[in-house]
Length: 113
Image 1 (tube, rainbow, N blue to C red):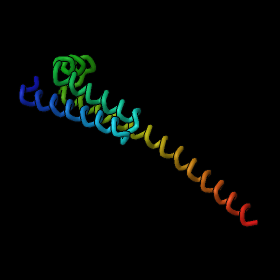
Image 2 (cartoon, rainbow, N blue to C red; image 1 turned 180 degrees about the horizontal axis):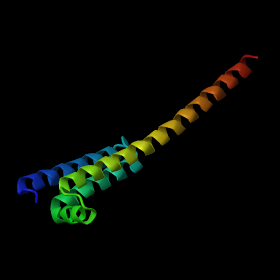
Image 3 (cartoon, rainbow, N blue to C red; image 1 turned 180 degrees about the vertical axis):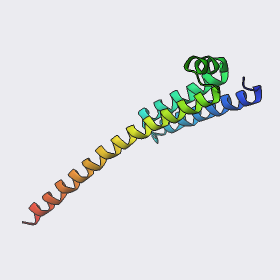
Protein backbone atom coordinates (compact mmCIF):
# COMPACT_ATOMS: atom_id res chain seq x y z
CA UNK A 1 0.00 0.00 0.00
CA UNK A 2 1.00 3.61 -0.52
CA UNK A 3 1.95 5.84 2.39
CA UNK A 4 -0.42 8.71 3.21
CA UNK A 5 2.09 11.47 2.33
CA UNK A 6 2.62 9.95 -1.12
CA UNK A 7 -1.12 9.58 -1.65
CA UNK A 8 -1.72 13.19 -0.62
CA UNK A 9 1.08 14.39 -2.91
CA UNK A 10 -0.38 12.43 -5.83
CA UNK A 11 -3.85 13.79 -5.10
CA UNK A 12 -2.59 17.38 -4.79
CA UNK A 13 -0.57 17.13 -8.02
CA UNK A 14 -3.56 15.73 -9.92
CA UNK A 15 -5.93 18.44 -8.65
CA UNK A 16 -3.45 21.25 -9.39
CA UNK A 17 -2.81 19.89 -12.87
CA UNK A 18 -6.54 19.67 -13.54
CA UNK A 19 -6.97 23.27 -12.38
CA UNK A 20 -4.14 24.33 -14.70
CA UNK A 21 -5.88 22.68 -17.67
CA UNK A 22 -9.15 24.40 -16.82
CA UNK A 23 -7.40 27.78 -16.78
CA UNK A 24 -5.79 27.03 -20.15
CA UNK A 25 -9.18 26.06 -21.61
CA UNK A 26 -10.81 29.24 -20.35
CA UNK A 27 -8.07 31.35 -21.94
CA UNK A 28 -8.43 29.38 -25.21
CA UNK A 29 -4.82 28.20 -25.00
CA UNK A 30 -5.63 24.50 -25.18
CA UNK A 31 -7.99 22.57 -27.39
CA UNK A 32 -10.76 20.76 -25.57
CA UNK A 33 -9.86 17.30 -26.90
CA UNK A 34 -6.34 17.60 -25.49
CA UNK A 35 -7.68 18.87 -22.19
CA UNK A 36 -10.16 16.00 -21.98
CA UNK A 37 -7.37 13.45 -22.33
CA UNK A 38 -5.23 15.07 -19.65
CA UNK A 39 -8.23 15.62 -17.38
CA UNK A 40 -9.10 11.92 -17.58
CA UNK A 41 -5.46 11.12 -16.93
CA UNK A 42 -5.51 13.32 -13.81
CA UNK A 43 -8.78 11.69 -12.78
CA UNK A 44 -7.10 8.31 -13.00
CA UNK A 45 -4.33 9.55 -10.73
CA UNK A 46 -6.94 10.75 -8.24
CA UNK A 47 -8.63 7.32 -8.27
CA UNK A 48 -5.26 5.62 -7.73
CA UNK A 49 -4.47 7.96 -4.85
CA UNK A 50 -7.85 7.48 -3.19
CA UNK A 51 -8.19 3.73 -3.81
CA UNK A 52 -4.74 2.10 -4.03
CA UNK A 53 -6.34 -1.27 -3.37
CA UNK A 54 -7.76 -1.19 -6.91
CA UNK A 55 -4.25 -1.23 -8.34
CA UNK A 56 -3.24 -4.10 -6.07
CA UNK A 57 -6.35 -6.05 -7.10
CA UNK A 58 -5.75 -5.37 -10.84
CA UNK A 59 -2.08 -6.36 -10.53
CA UNK A 60 -3.04 -9.63 -8.88
CA UNK A 61 -5.70 -10.21 -11.53
CA UNK A 62 -3.25 -9.96 -14.44
CA UNK A 63 -0.38 -11.64 -12.60
CA UNK A 64 1.94 -8.66 -12.15
CA UNK A 65 3.91 -8.94 -8.93
CA UNK A 66 4.30 -5.25 -8.15
CA UNK A 67 1.32 -2.89 -8.41
CA UNK A 68 3.74 -0.06 -9.24
CA UNK A 69 4.77 -1.98 -12.37
CA UNK A 70 1.13 -2.16 -13.44
CA UNK A 71 0.76 1.60 -12.97
CA UNK A 72 3.93 2.27 -14.99
CA UNK A 73 2.82 -0.14 -17.71
CA UNK A 74 -0.60 1.49 -17.97
CA UNK A 75 0.81 5.03 -17.98
CA UNK A 76 3.37 4.16 -20.66
CA UNK A 77 0.67 2.47 -22.76
CA UNK A 78 -1.64 5.48 -22.50
CA UNK A 79 1.14 7.91 -23.41
CA UNK A 80 2.14 5.80 -26.43
CA UNK A 81 -1.48 5.81 -27.61
CA UNK A 82 -1.63 9.58 -27.18
CA UNK A 83 1.65 10.02 -29.02
CA UNK A 84 0.35 7.91 -31.90
CA UNK A 85 -2.86 9.93 -32.15
CA UNK A 86 -0.88 13.18 -32.13
CA UNK A 87 1.42 11.82 -34.85
CA UNK A 88 -1.59 11.02 -37.03
CA UNK A 89 -2.97 14.52 -36.42
CA UNK A 90 0.40 16.10 -37.22
CA UNK A 91 0.66 14.13 -40.47
CA UNK A 92 -2.79 15.28 -41.52
CA UNK A 93 -1.93 18.88 -40.67
CA UNK A 94 1.31 18.69 -42.70
CA UNK A 95 -0.63 17.40 -45.71
CA UNK A 96 -3.12 20.26 -45.35
CA UNK A 97 -0.30 22.81 -45.13
CA UNK A 98 1.33 21.42 -48.27
CA UNK A 99 -1.96 21.52 -50.16
CA UNK A 100 -2.63 25.07 -48.98
CA UNK A 101 0.86 26.23 -49.99
CA UNK A 102 0.39 24.70 -53.45
CA UNK A 103 -3.02 26.34 -53.78
CA UNK A 104 -1.59 29.75 -52.82
CA UNK A 105 1.31 29.33 -55.25
CA UNK A 106 -1.10 28.50 -58.09
CA UNK A 107 -3.30 31.51 -57.22
CA UNK A 108 -0.27 33.85 -57.17
CA UNK A 109 0.92 32.49 -60.52
CA UNK A 110 -2.53 32.99 -62.03
CA UNK A 111 -2.64 36.58 -60.72
CA UNK A 112 0.74 37.35 -62.29
CA UNK A 113 -0.48 36.27 -65.73
